[in-house]
Image (cartoon, protein in one colour):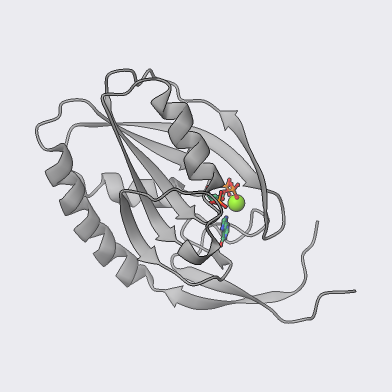
Length: 183
Ligand SMILES: O=P(O)(O)OC[C@H]1O[C@H](OP(=O)(O)OP(=O)(O)O)[C@H](O)[C@@H]1O
Ligand SMILES: [Mg+2]
């Protein structure tokens, strides 16, 4: 479905993202130092760029797995119903797990996926989100590490979409509609 016309204003540059990922990777390495069994789980689709950059900064023995969840359609509002579209390939029982999320907005997705993964009894489950919009939170959840706290703007780029578009932007931008909504 075509959306109203919009432009994208830069919010966080590719350079700032790369610098922040280096810092986050240092903290994660400290947390998981000594582990021989870290599974890094990317939450698709939005986290595919972030996880690719993050794991390349982690000189730890890691395995990578993916879970696909979806709750936004083509609009900018959550359906508040998290659908699991693809499950992990591997077992995580007894393992150290790092769940990688692109953005925490209402919190429904992260909360739901944490519950799902905890039910499989990992040894340790930690979470990281590149972006956090605390002012939009509807359920009580927070990632263990956050890249950037951002204001209440609909963002795209660096893996994050609006109606499946703009995931390939190298930076984070905010969507600005250029025409008023039809009544
Ligand atoms: O905190 P919330 O309000 O739940 O929003 C955050 C989630 O919403 C988006 O996923 P989406 O459903 O758009 O799927 P996608 O990753 O495939 O784009 C985003 O990638 C997060 O996973
Ligand atoms: Mg999306």
